[in-house]
Image 1 (tube, rainbow, N blue to C red):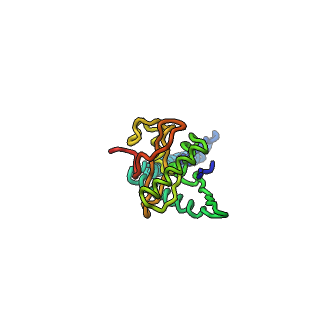
Image 2: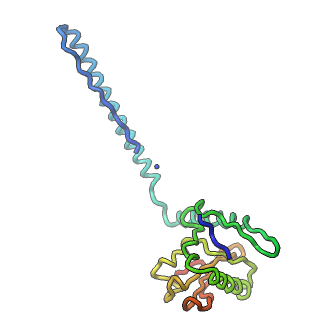
Image 3: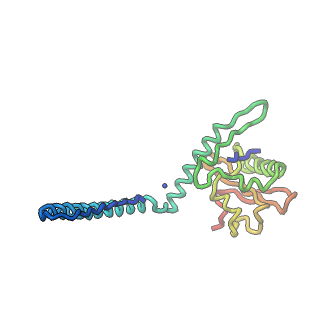
Length: 215
């Protein structure tokens, strides 16, 4: 059984110091004081304009950087994350005494929910998982004639089937009776959808492909 391990405005603040002159009988002194106040106020106004302009620029830059990704960009990013996860997963495979051991990557190191399969595998006990993997392995080797390991599905776009009211090819089955696997078809990763009639019933492969959607 393979199971995943559980696993920043810029605010410009302008402080204006208002200077008030003390009373004096010297008109020149008053004039000098007024001149200082006038100069300070002009400088403060100029600085305020600079700060406002800077804030506007930075806000615009932040807005640009926070623009949501397009669907194609998200899809590309997910594919990159999936490839990285699978490569790391492969490095964690080792054999000892006839047993294959796997050290799975930490899904917290990946984005978009890649690798986070515990949300659906936790629906099933160890016996149910073993039975599902056995059926999936037999299908991949016997029906598809492929020599590929069968893994728990790590693609969030597939795992979405559990929360999706429209379960596509698995329409009519509830989440507790659907199980996902993935396998490598000569470099092209595909998914298996297994279903059963209810707890205790046998698993069977309903569909294999790249999506559970019917359109």
